[in-house]
Picture (cartoon, rainbow, N blue to C red):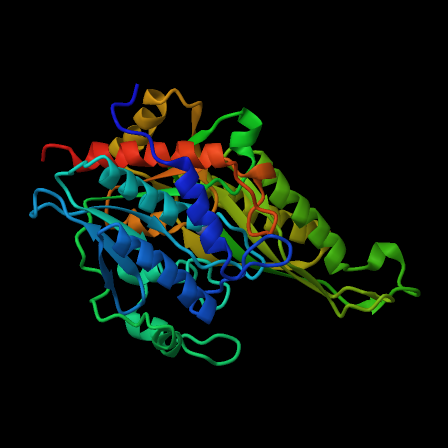
Length: 413
Ligand SMILES: [Zn+2]
């Protein structure tokens, strides 16, 4: 049994639904793109709730919001939790919002039960996690950890040429606090899974042990364009035909390193894109992922070998360029254990899982011990207006978050 109180699941759900009214879409989703007027309204609503809960609110220069609940030991760095409230253009009600409002609900529960923690608790709302309107994705946390420069990021423009810095000012969230350099004792983030594994395995809590590493490649296959009629099959250098073998390799490499292996071709262009011309060039993207850096390196070697072999077999050239690499990020073992214990003490069916998607937590892991808590989302679907999570699962995830926050904040340093 958990010795902690239970969160108020109804209050959590009601807050989620109230936030979801801002930027509601006809199909039941949310469109609250980063730094739009609607994002501003969403921020105002949640900041109001933070203040009602007695939190001291600070906004930094990239618009990250921190709400602090004092601890009994003013010397201690805060135990932080949070996520984001911006959404995709056709996003759902739970991606990000759950992490922020679960943190708020955990704090409201501490308030309701008069729980004083040794370490302060901080609730964070990170700017522009989705990266839909402005790049990079996970912007606020990336600047916070020093991975992106503040000046460059403030100058980023959307498709209409509007700048991050100006848009922050317009919605009233160009804060004056320094970005980063804020001590963090630990960071927990609750999130919907955005995949189908918990549902398939019939579990309620995903104990996230880390994130998948990824390699992105841009590939160009060059053969020779020729007339589709007069050119006999044996003499062709068909770039698209050769590429079809490469595409299969990508999938096989992903499948061959399961369950944590992934291989995806997301974009493909055949040129000159004419129905009676044998394609002379094909450009495509490759996304390989794995939770283990050495396996990801193996997948990279297999992929490069496949490029060479298929180029030779088909008499084409294959140029493959690695354009992005994120190493796998293992989360902190003691924080992961706190999540696992929370689930166990509340008798919630749980399993270890890795995150295939990027999260602010993955950035935070480079500056503070970090862990995440996943709850199931219906059919594993997110970044979609039909995204759905059950109230009882969200409540369960929030209870585990409360337990994990308290376990860390009450620790005798
Ligand atoms: Zn998210």
